[in-house]
Image 1 (cartoon, rainbow, N blue to C red):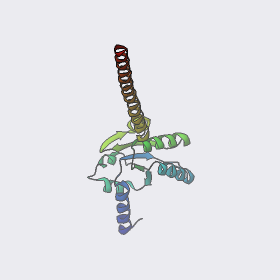
Image 2 (image 1 turned 60 degrees about the vertical axis):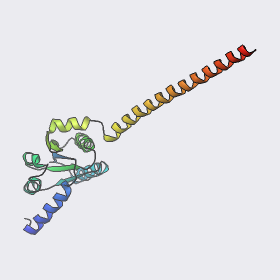
Image 3 (image 1 turned 30 degrees about the vertical axis):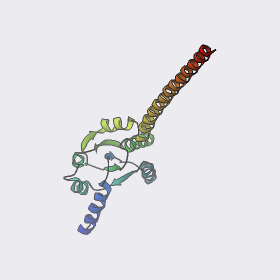
Image 4 (image 1 turned 135 degrees about the vertical axis):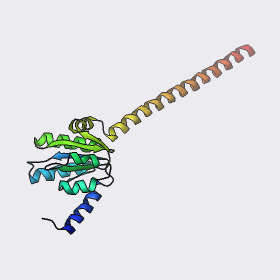
Length: 176
């Protein structure tokens, strides 16, 4: 059993773990091997997310009064807490895909911007486009708009040039 000093250290570590998180996902990771845990952590690391397994009582102490207070009802039994620090969709996608691939573990729910998510909400979040995908589609839309504007402007300039050329021809015909 951990001493009071060690528990205080763990609480401090957990506060740092949850600090600046955009989304927290709670999963039951019962049955995962050490190799699967390691692979899962590496997968999450690529998505700017971290996994932590801790005693529920210590987690409840850390989240009390924070935007993650809704995790209280999810922190029952063996729990893995996944915190995403950047794009909320990426960790949800990584968790869903990894647990589906190894056919172990289940998602219980999570919290996004202070709002509780159930397992279905987390799966829906996993199907959303990532931040990079959204930005690229916005840029493509802006780029096509810019190309259209450039085409319109060049057509106007071309039309003005034709008009000036026709006026010059008429004047030459009138002078001759």
